Image 1 (cartoon, rainbow over the protein chains, first blue to last red):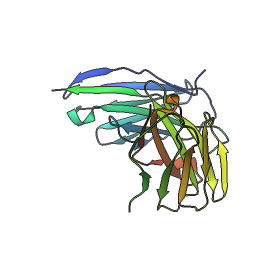
Image 2: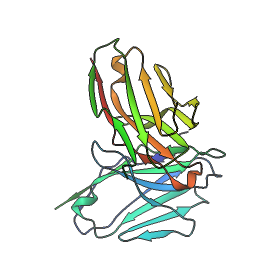
Image 3: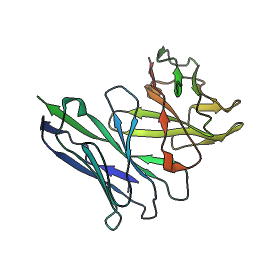
Image 4: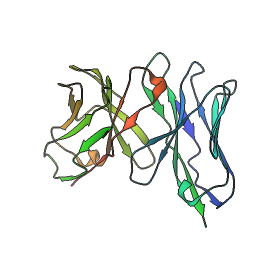
Length: 110
Length: 113
């Protein structure tokens, strides 16, 4: 089983719509969770950390469900500029290294 | 503040040629990493370093060597390039605590013909 699994999508949504997607992680003892954004042919950039109680950053909301071992990302009022691949990232247990999911592609259309 | 800088940005090699990719960071991070990214496969760790003078193998180390002679620099070498090494290579750095995430360089797009 992969350490981090994501639905590759693509999720095609109109501007202004809400889009949400999850990723699952295999190790219940993982402690650090992130969402990264990667634009085509560019480097991954940290979008937001994910905290146990859930957190928001503008139009982006991240949730953590430890019981079911998944994290989610919700984007409200989608903009064309939100079109990207979103990487789910989880720390390896007892290790400082991070495991990256293969990404979920979101395309926002006008 | 430049963050993580990779050179070169693009390179085309012939099979059997060698080259070195340079990664430099100015954030005083202890840890540095080399990843490759191929379509549909996500990021795969090649080698990493937890400090000056130390290196370790990641998931896909074969065909690559690394060196970390200075804290701010992490070099990735291909001794005899193969077409299977055609990929985008990303360097990243981080503090020792995984809770801070990684900072990535802008990548090197390598084609081996």
